Length: 219
Image (cartoon, rainbow, N blue to C red; front, side, top):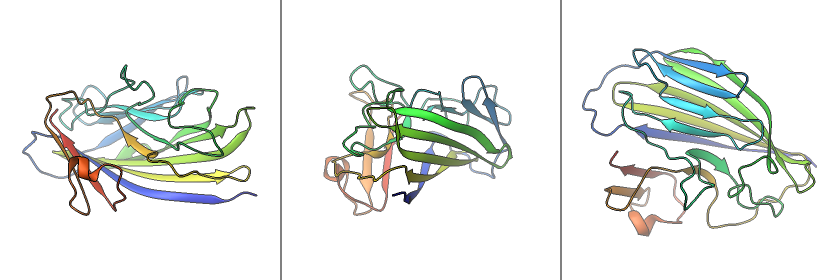
């Protein structure tokens, strides 16, 4: 039995320390077909501000993400104490008993497609499509991530539309965490704060359901 379920998310990333405000800047999305990497370039900056990694045999993820001025890195890739955490990514922890959150490699993930949908303008859009594999290498679920992005003087706005199509009967098991995840370059001593829609902060907000969660830290 096949079915489709979807989740729509808005993920704003704010560059700390930028006092300017203004209109949206021109962006360009470029695809490297050999690697499956999509880079998002902002007019006037030499380096990309967002990189979509979409290898054939690895879970897709965004890293690095830099500020609107090209300074600072907002994401972290595979720290030694949590090697499975790769910038911004989506991973369920229990799908038919399989853990796609802690296992990002090719025995769990297989790319089907990666492409740029809107290459230039005040917003750009791109898409990745992956099969989530069972222990025998068969597709259990096909996920589509459709990202759009805009950028102005003091912030980037990333919007994610996530869609999943079951290739067999699918059960997503209950687990304390999973789905959209953001790995930031936090270390002990760096100031940071989290607050959710119920106005719970920091540890009080951890693991709780909420319509939105605002997380910030010094970069």
